[in-house]
Length: 288
Image (tube, rainbow, N blue to C red):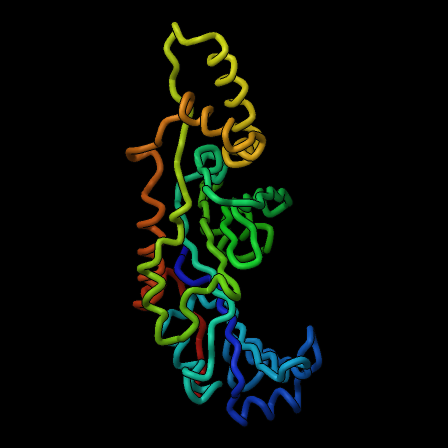
């Protein structure tokens, strides 16, 4: 499975006339935009949904579909054809991700903490469990089971996995003011940003037999809660001062090869996308 860029939405005050006319002719009003058209269903066959004529400000929106399959070169080429010039657009939302094969999402959730995270959610549906470790208007960090998601969507890629095979996705969603680099020419800078700087890996210590009975009881209770809800969710049950004492007394830093270097994996996934190293078949993009 690929990583790198998984979603890209741009805003622009300019659209090439041929696409603007096409939207006006065949598009329909939707979601605050006067004319919306799916360019996959046109002769251009671009993997883009074009939202034209925002009702409040006249701004246009360009949303890529399946951008993980494109890479930077094709993305730039498509944008240049739609916009005329790349400087006309600014990034409004960008999702960056990496996939960890052989790692169950629950195994990761049981050892991950995210600092300075105010909101936390767990969703469980037929697509599997999703942990929103950070959930704000401008930045969201989530973990989920990619194999179960593909299966729930009926994606043919789900058939490429063996029964019981794990693939955990780590995804960072940046929106609005949370987008650090808004210009297309600065895409390469995303590979050098520590998007997981708030990630910390911790596990319960193995207490000695002569440890305080209170500590032994606390460790047993924490272990059960972590197994049921994940470490970050358990942390949120305690006040910051109480958790600081608990973490110092009962936890240790998780090191070694048990969990891969998540920051390095995300960086390499982004670099792969930037260098057009795509791990499965791309869209067939038809150019005029």
